[in-house]
Image 1: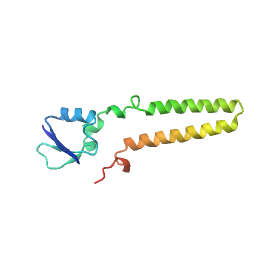
Image 2: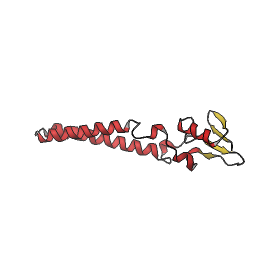
Image 3: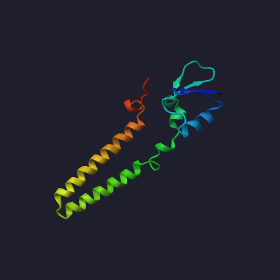
Image 4: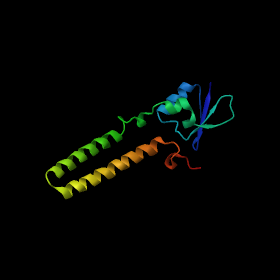
Length: 126
């Protein structure tokens, strides 16, 4: 079965769902792109097609992205803060703890925005 994908840059045809899925995994087909299945008249957003939505993109993988690195930095910062607190360096420990808290809050909110297809940052502007 053939599939047609369109976005603001144009349209492209895929001869099979396998080709469409490969393009999705490589990031060539974005979640906001519209897909038309052969024989149908309704265009659908790519991220509403269950088989595509379940396919893991390389950038979404926690171990392959920067989130894991930022989490390690957060753990290291928290450890440093605890060690400073233990050494009675309360002001410096508090400053490090606040910085780590802000960093981890930012990483967590960015991760949620990236995964939530209905979040305003992920909806296409038309």
